[in-house]
Amino acid sequence: MLAARVVNGIATATSETLLVQVIADMLFLHERGLWTGVYFMGYFLGLFIGPVISGNIAQKYGWRSFFWLSLALTCFNLITLLICFPETRFRRDSVLEGSELRATSSPSQNIKQTSQEVESEQLENIERANTVSSGRPSRSQFKLWQAPEAEWKAILLRDIISPFRLFFFPIILWAALNVAGPANLLLFWNLTESSVLSAPPYNFSPSSVGYANFAFVVGGLVGLATAGPFSDWVAVRATKRNNGIREAEMRLPALIPYFMFTVVGIVIGGVGYDRLWDWPVVLVVGYGFSGLCVTTVPTIAIAYAVDCYKPISGEIMVVATVIKNTCGFAMSYWVMPMAARRGFLAPAMVEFALTIGPMVLGLPIYFFGKRLRRLTRHSSVHSYAD
Image (cartoon, rainbow, N blue to C red; front, side, top):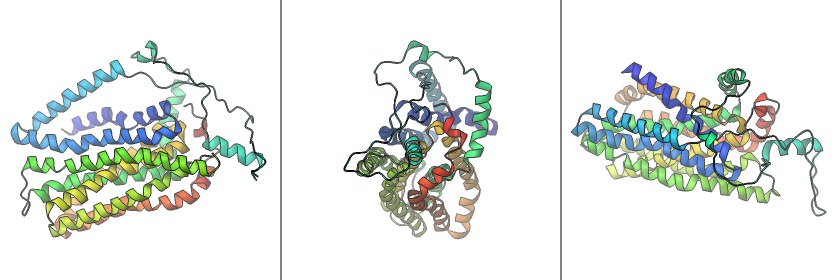
């Protein structure tokens, strides 16, 4: 069983990194928030409804049947991926060569910036397409084997080493923590729901415990419908107020309402566990608001990090995945033992700190993120091929 999980982890790890790269390849700056939200909703949907399906199958047919279902779905996904998914990577010649950037001003505006500052800001915050056209993917993009880059060995070594460097980029580390916190909040509820809901006074059956996860689904769908478009709208509105100059940090105020929902969800869920409140309160507020958090906070945080470091969008998700999975692995060793000793409120508050703490750090990131980006402006990651 352990070996099977290792092999499965190697295969499924690609889904945690490649899709953000596809979003960065295909979509414009003002669309990334929406489609990053779609990605995270699809990613976490399996965690939302997996317990619903597995609980019913285990009760009626045995737990092994769920693994056969997972195998069938994986094979179907592989076939559709091979047939329907084209290569999205495309090398473009940069339109920003040398010092061709020029700052323009109108008589009614006085822009008090040096040419060096203008060039730096333009390079950091403005993306331009060198072609505007429409069409369909060519047949060559659907080939099972794509011709590698001439320097593919150097690129492979670079991509292996880069994530270790990125742990020391403050913005990327912050975004990764805001993926790990909500994801492991969901894991906390998944680890504890069976022990709490199947015991008195709730006495849920295994299938009913699984159905409780629909609260996460509802919250996640609300997050899908709001987080991406809302963060894009906030950023576009701030850009217009800033005379059309886009700053990556303009997306971050969209975190504020989701921060409030997250605080309420964890507190109500944790206290409800500890004091055995009525199950609708625990499920609707605790689980539902947590589901909202899981699809919204990572969406905004990762979209912001990709805005700052688009050429390394995949490596950003590698960092986030390593932190998320490491913390998640550790949770299996301390959550239930702590709950047995001190009740469920104590581990809920630990998870509260791990989730809310990185979100609170979004405030200094909003004010000082530009300075942090300047600290890495000479890094080689900006020259990586898109």
